[in-house]
Image (tube, rainbow, N blue to C red; front, side):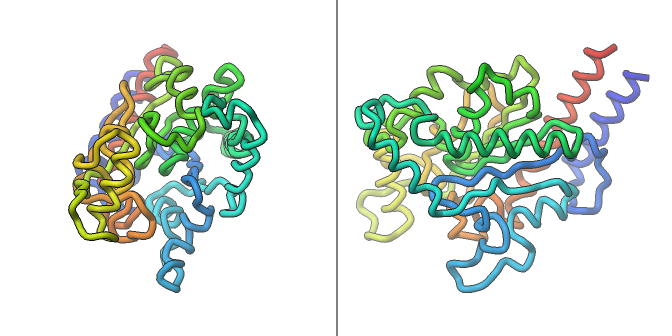
Length: 301
């Protein structure tokens, strides 16, 4: 019976991956866990909902990333409650000597965010009776790793997978704006750190823009060169316009690279959560969950 269930799970996920059509293929509920979207630095929760098009003076009629996930069967999807003004709390780190020296652990300036992740995961897990999928955009990716690693990895027991979208997972070579927090995460929880404990890691990276120092000011290529130079020490590399490709992947994770995909929600047609982009990575996430579930069935035999 266990073997039959395992094979059915894998078959369902494989068909979904090959024949993926939003809201038209019935995937088993176990492959639709509760989802918690983690906002990136400076972002507001509403950016991942109707506020996606706020910069254009209108609302996203389909509910933004959250609405698209729900339409694809992830009915228990929510966004971590974060207001744009909350990010000012990071400035409180200036009162800490280690923060000023660039050697602070994540809790110094980002503890408020990590606490909210813990609370939201625990709530979703208890309410839905399942482990949670963390879908983390930008800095939300490394902050998720920090939350999973703190308190001896206690939160990981409630999380099935971490999927990062354009997350800067490596410490910048210059001007570390995390003031040591990202260095701490990479030293204490490197790569797919909790994979052996059954946590699936997927890193999604865009490769839409190659930086160009000689490009006209204000162009995507020039802005990318500035960002990439700060992060990896050179600007003429591919990336999503903000995060260079080599910084967006984690060793040991399932790595998905998407040409033509950009970092910012301000490019709503081509960012990671866009209607025409989401189905380029979500089926692979579902397949990973199926493999994980099948392995669990085998282990419980």
